[in-house]
Image 1 (cartoon, rainbow, N blue to C red):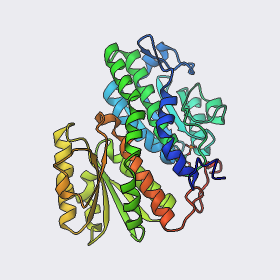
Image 2: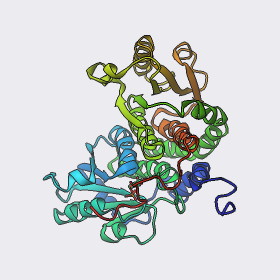
Image 3: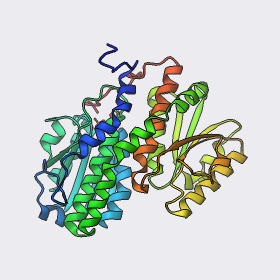
Length: 371
Ligand code: G6P
C-alpha cells in the first residue's frame, strides 16, 4: 500500500530516503570509551591483531561495497585487501589460512555463492566475519562472527540503503583492525569514526537536492546506453551506478576506471552518448581531480554528453559538465556515501519514466539462493 511505501510510489524510493537512518543505525553503539567496538563479533583483539590479509567476498552491490572498503582498509591498516566475487572465489584456490580474515558481505545473508564462499574459507581455517542485514540468516550463522548492518528491511530488489550501510560496516571493520594493529593512533580512530557519524546528515543534504536529478532522468529516458567513469573510490561508485541502471532501466550501462578510457572505452564515445563521471573532491589529491577533468574534456571533445557528479563548489569541473549534479563536501574516503545517492535516484527515475516496475525488475530476485 501507499502507506507502507511512506507515500512513495515504490519501496525503492522510500529506501533511498531512509539512507541517513540506515547509516546512523549501523554506526550506533560502535564507539565507546574512545574505542571502536564490534561487540556482536566473536573475534578477539588478538584475532584482529593476527590478521595478515583480508578478503572481502560478496555478490552484486555488496561486492561493490567491498571494492570501496579496500581503499579505506588498505590505507588505514596497511593490510592487503582482496575483493572477490563470491562466485569466483569459491572456484579458485584462494590462499587462505588462520590469519586471513574473510569478510562476507550480504544484505540477505542467504546468497548461495556467498554462503559457499564462507564454507570454503572456514574449511581452509580462515576466520570469517559476516556483514549482514538480516538477523539470524544462514551466512551469519555459519560465520565465526557477525557485524549487522541496521538498514532495516529492504524490499526493492535493487539494493540501496543496505549498500550504504555495508560501506559503513566495512569501514567499522577497517577501523577495528587499525585500532588492534596500532596502525592508527586512538585519536585518529576517533576522528575517522566522528567523520562517519557526520555522514547521515551529509546524505540527508544530498537527498534534498535530487529534484534536478529526477528532471535529468526524465530527459535521459530514451538513451540507449550510458557509461560511468570514476577513479579511486569513485570507480566502484561508477560500477554501482551502472549496475543500478542495468537492473532497473534495462539499459546498456558500463562502469569503467577513468584511467582505462584510452584502453578501450573511449572507442565507444559517439555524439550524444551520456557519460556519467564521478569526480573526486577538488580539495583531495589534486592529481586525481586534474586527471578526471582531463578525461572529461577528452570525451566531451568527442561528442559525449557529460553528466558530472561533483562536490559542491567545484568550479574547475563546471565548464566541462553538460549536466552538473552537486553533492556535499565530505572526506575523500567517504565520498561514495554521497555520490552513490544521485546515481540511485537517476536509475530509479529513468526506470519509472520508461514505465518499468522499480521494485521488481524483470528476471531479477532479491536474494539469489540458487547458483
Ligand atoms: C541480488 C540483488 C542485489 C544484491 C545481490 C547480493 O542480485 O538484486 O541488490 O546486491 O543480490 O545480495 P546479498 O543479499 O548477498 O547482499
